[in-house]
Image (tube, rainbow over all chains, first blue to last red; front, side, top):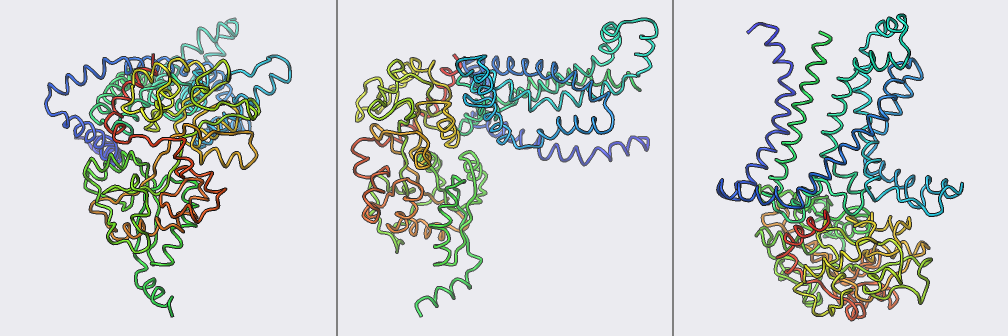
Amino acid sequence: MPLYRISQWALIAPALVLVIALFMMPIAWFVGASLAELGSIDAIWSEAKSVLGSRAILGAIWTTNVIALVVTISALIIGYPLSYALSRAKGLAFSLILICIVVPYFTSVVVRTYAWMVILGRNGIVNQVLLSTGLINEPLNLMYNRLGVVIGMTYVLLPYMVLTLFGAMKAVDSRLLQAAEGMGARPLTIFAKVFLPLTLHGVMAGSLIVFILAIGFFITPALMGGTGDIMMATLIEREIEVSQNWPVAALMTIALLAITLTLYALYGRFADRSGERFV
Amino acid sequence: MLTAPFVLRGTAQSSEQVIVRTTGGRYDDVMRRQVYDPFTELTGITVIPVAATIAKMLTMARARNVELDLIDAAIGPLVTLQREGVLAPIDYGSWKWSKPDDVMVDYRQDKHVGHYVYASVLAYNTNSFPDGQHPQNWSDFWNSEKFAGPRMLADMATGHPNLEFALLADGVPMDQLYPLDIKRAFEAMSRLRPHIRKFWDTGALSSQMMLDQEVLLGSIWNGRVQPLIDQGVPLGFVWNQHMQQLQSLGVFEGAPNAKNAQMLIDFMLQPEVQARYSADLQYGPTNQKAFGILTAEQAAQLPGSPASRAVGFLPNIDWWEDNRELVNREWSNWILQ
């Protein structure tokens, strides 16, 4: 093995050991020990069929994916112009935008959610302003429903979208845009024919990251959702805490992990292609 | 002269400790002041409260790596642990401060003992429902025409959703609730569901929703709504048809400080100690002698008192332990309809 290969492995080894010891092994232990409770492969198979075919889990998978998709699209719509502004900003403006995007990310999820309650509640700021201006007569239900979940999750996941897009936009050679302009293209054409295609891999990568993170969400839907906004993580948590049925929790975990890994494989494809482009 | 031996013991055993699983938050502050510090002063044993979910405690027990001694939890999780065979017997014989017979017999078990009673009550906003026009029972709560407004009930995540209240609303008498008719309960819940804004999963969320008027009616723990009323928030509640819930103590088999844990149980259940922390927490004592120490006014506000027992019920914990998994599955199917 050439020296640079060995040094590559040496550099990656600490992280690899950490991930295997702290992440992979506990999951393997949990899934292994839980499924072992069922006894035989046949028992696991029939339990898997009944669990994963149940109305509850299919409903939760559907709800989870719908919410994750809406959150991803929302984050993209808000994040794309924001990233563009960030990629063009300099000095103080750059620092300010970056701080605004990143600081909420470091705030505890409970504090953030209570802040949203103050803003979105029935007697919250938004409703008070709308009521006092006469735009509405009855307070709007902005949280404890699907809308609340989407607002809360989009807010939490926005930094991932913005920072991924920022990387892609920063890498766009501004001379290409100038060249297009010089050849008489209108701004909209420059965006559609040059800038967007050059940042599309960032859009895909950012969207996949947000989607993958969104399908595992637990606290925000629990705190900001309504009665029917049940995501997969909620069901898994209840199987562990309420039912103490670890085999079922393990099967649900495998299902969620399978969805995540499938998406991650897709993400890997886009990340690789973006890599080729610049090497 | 009398204090001297304790001082000596205190210094000699300064490394002695007992690790207690508690519910955390304000509860720990009250217990620190009224129970743990006085206990440490008397015995030299330091009390360390920690947080742990039932799943974490089960994992500890299964991995044979018990990191805590005393479990202070709702009776449900303690029965779960008992059935798992990981609890040691309560050493009633060794008690020197409390008398076992003073603790009501319903609250006293081989491997766990109740130390306070809390209640799920029907609370309402007094601006919307002033005196004389407020809901009196769970049938009223289910009557969304007469008592209009968003509502909340307990979530499955609490381990004990309000199926009893649904059945009471549907006309089942309070003394014939068990075994619960799960199907009938969910049918009653379905009728009210359009008016339910949220199922609360923590005490903090339930009081926040009442405080912010996100809901006008709700089931809530009495110890969560009484402080709001005392602060002047326009809320009220009725004791009628309330559910008494027991908070109990148990000791892990093979706990590192098992003896200290048994001592702390003995200390906690004394009438004087119970009276002090019950009054602060607004939860009822299990040692019946403690009611004699509290003022009549205080006792009237605490669940588990003779007056409260006459209008409320104690849930059948064995039924819940046998059926919680089934109810959880039914709940998931129902909630995702």
